[in-house]
Length: 250
Image (cartoon, rainbow, N blue to C red; front, side, top):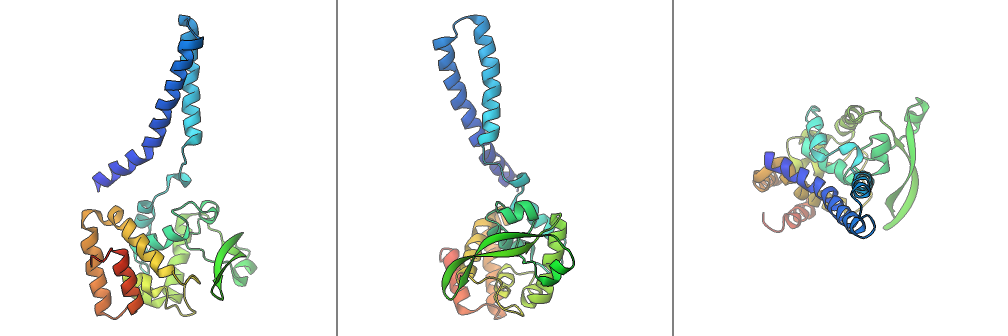
């Protein structure tokens, strides 16, 4: 896990360092051409360096509050009804890797809508245009979504929703594939209207697994897949989607 931590830091810092070198090189060329005197050169480099630093801070695409999937995974481990990795996969997909407006402004990681009862209680919500699949077509619909003050508040509500509305996911909270498969078998229907939703979650799980599980990620996904098949949790098309996501290596 230490290796992955160093890797993440290096990937994060590289654009910042790269920009500094480019800008400093440009400043050096300008200095050699227009600022020959020693005093002028010193002042130019001092203020030029500060300009480089400010420019880089503004130019680097910072993530919302430096939040990561690991942060979410660790927080989700405290809630019994959810599979922490499954919840991280689910919410990472829903938020576009923690960059959506709903996540940044409302800490709503799963697109949980604000129904009439929520609004009647005076609970906070956000109106946002979201993509939904209706009649086989993708359309943009303005909907009200719940707004939370913190990740803890969201996870508490999300955990209750999984427990009450997606009992199969809650029952298989120790199996990533059973948990994700259960999102298609809720008491009131599927979690999402997108017919390719499960395929996208499977791909996201494979993408994030090395970050969560480390070097043993493929063995763990394979073992949980075999368990899910053994219990008959998944439908055949879901099994094929997982096999495809894993590159046929299962």
